[in-house]
Length: 202
Image (cartoon, rainbow, N blue to C red; front, side):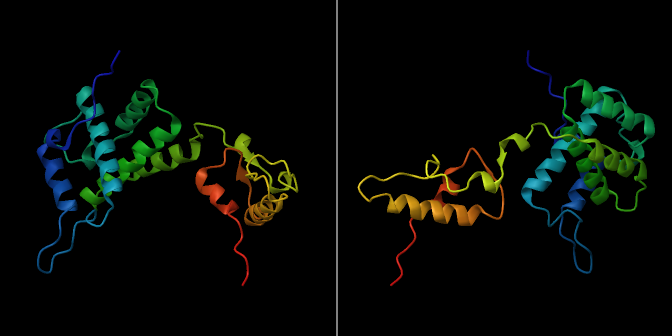
């Protein structure tokens, strides 16, 4: 069953929020400072827009949005506790919840620079400390010592007809390039480029 869309598009934001967001992303006029989000990367801006819209969606769904309320004025202990519970009930991972609150902090920071959002910042710190990885990566890491001098390493390409010299050169270069750090078992095509034959010295 498809979940109902909750995130509000910028065109659906309260009028005051739209004006403050536009100002935060606008170049300043003569002797006027630029908006605080003007120099953000597009990826950052899109992420903040999405997660601020998610926050407004929660407020709208629970009847707390308040057209005449300033963005920072909607921040309260009750609203934030409800937001975290709402995110959790929707099946979001701890990392996703931490990101949602982090970007909410960023949105309010640039929309209302002088506003008191200490409660939100404290929640951001708490969720960041509690977040857990969504997958275990340590099982995919192999210590460099495991590479050793295994001539049968499947990551090293084999060539017939050259008495194994090409394979030995590749193994030597591959071991050297990876001796200072662990590498993943699921080596990528880019990583295989380290195994190119050494150029002959003139």
